[in-house]
Length: 256
Image (cartoon, rainbow, N blue to C red; front, side):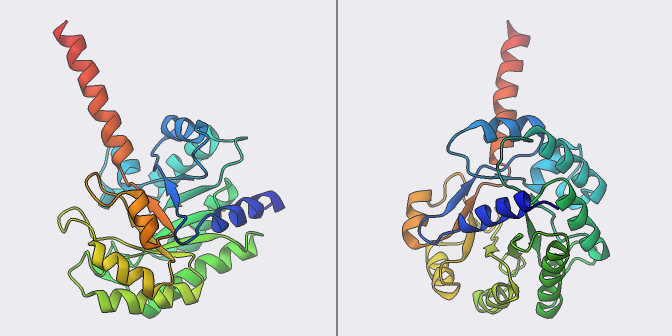
C-alpha cells in the first residue's frame, strides 16, 4: 500500500471533529459516488450497505460479501483520481471473512469501514470482547498493509435490539479504547432513531466521538453539531430520493 493511501486515511480521521462533524452523503454505486465526489462540499465518500444491497437487487440482510466487494470496486473506480477518502459499510464483517474483506478493500483504496457488533449469521449480538477483538483485527490488518490510520466507525446495535443506553456506553467506550475512531449508535426507523437526550448523553460519554444517522425528520446537522457529535451520515436517503425522482419522471413519460 502507498503512503498516499494512509495520508487519505489520516485526512479522513482528522475530519472527525466533535462539534464540527464530517457530513457524509452515503452512496451505493459508481454513478452516485461520482456525483457526490464531484461536489466541493463533499470531503469523503461513504457507502450504505442497505442502499448497496438494493442496487444489487437484494436486501441488506442478504447482501453477500461478493456483492459488497463488487460494488465497492465499482465505486472506487468511479472516484479514482479525485483524491477523496472512501469508507465502506461492511455490515458485521461477514464472520471469519473479516480480515480478508478488509484486505481486499484496502487493495482498492478504501481507508475506513463501518463495522457492526450484531452477528448477522447467528442473529445475536457479538459479546463486547468479541466486538473489541474484531475492531483490533481490522486495525491490525490495515497496519500490516501500510494503513495504520485506517478509520473504524464502530456501529453499536444494542439500542436497535431493545437494549439499554448504559450497555451502549459501556460497549462504545471499549470500542473507542480498542482504536475505533467513532461509535455509531443506530436506533433504527421503527424506534425513530435515537433521541436528543440520548445524543447528549452519548456525546458526553464518548467525549464527542459519536456518529449518528440523520433521518429525514430528525435533528438538523447544525443542531447535532451544537450538541457535539463528530460524524453525520444519511444511510439510504440519497437512493430513496433518486428512486422517487425516477418514478416521477417515468410516470410523466408513460402518461404523456
